[in-house]
Length: 519
Image 1 (cartoon, rainbow, N blue to C red):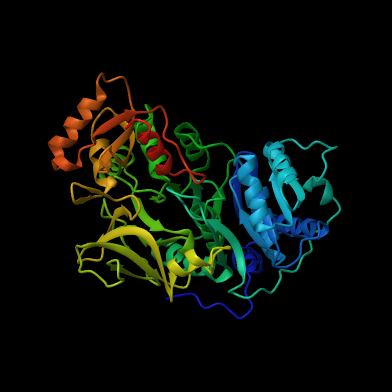
Image 2 (image 1 turned 135 degrees about the vertical axis):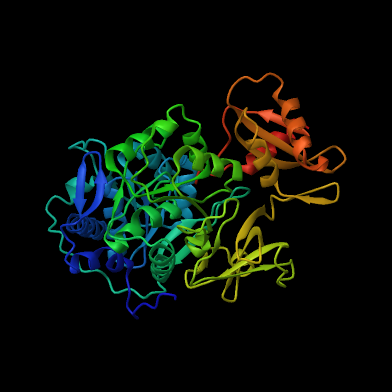
């Protein structure tokens, strides 16, 4: 059931050019508040981006950093890079200059396509970089006619006639970055083959996407989860995507859903939590949605149940990694088991193993191994980590799971997050799910901290819905009443906001540092 590409294969052709060749050039591909773009118009935009990059000196196989907000320019730039046979390095446009400089130096990008809303940060990053890339400025803000390196000015006389390079299926296509909740994210080099394979296995077969589907996403396009679900997947079937550059909030999502009537919502637990707790949640009309997906972080059962009660739209939890590009474990429409990641997506294979790599029986917790044709080449400039994680045809990450006899997989945390408390193993997600059932808790995270005797104890960080008095004692007692005593948090710290990584996941390393300051 895996995808078998031709010996010459470029995903710009697979996702975009082929739609025009099929006669869908006049079909809507992108929807924004300002209007729509057809597949033909997107192809023309991508060709002009490719031609502009050529003028900047970009050649086949060179890296091009893309740091744009979610506008049609992002789509045009991404496919323009791919059409040249170059490699896209997708980054969060809001990264600090020091982090951007590090990315520019490690990737040795020859060009950076930058959103004009963050141009100042990038100019500072480029000045500090060892190798200064060419710049191409684009995005949704108003164009300054005197602006240097403007895509609009550079491409004004370009005809949009560009032949897509005949790359190999195993050529690098896009750099993604691992989620990295406890350490520095690693650059994952992914191939043309991977993006097409997961699209065939997950988007088309498991989810059953069709030309009638309209997608909208909470995570932004630089996050591989959204690159697939809110761009590549709808494009592969002749559907359309809704794009907006703003940072998503519950109010913005409700408004976009009312305006554009999507059929698929790409979501994450943090936003699910905000949406179900919104004062106007129960008045929203979600009847256009066939289903919503959740990934990126663990989805607590209480939160899943509140979603079902509030919106009644089927919610599909799943798991994917940058190293396998996208989702390979998922609940599917019509077959959802809350509290699980669903079952393995056909076309992939998993096993649950002990530390020696020996499979464990169903029902036991072990490390997740996954195999399939979406496996990355490896980590850029990190042969040791590549050798440890890519073992033969298998990718071996840090996720701990448990599989039941029906094949449903439950997430049990990451190996570096799981705690040993009093000689017993504790998954933070179990305590977090319990805390989420308390009416005063809006959001929470649990980490392990060593006390003065070197013993690990669970600490909880919560965002409260309102002033509830001595919340620490209330929550300790609540967990003691619902879980085994060793699992209760020894401290409960109330925060206004939880720290997050570049991909929006809870930054557990930052929480551990904060917890140690209180010991």
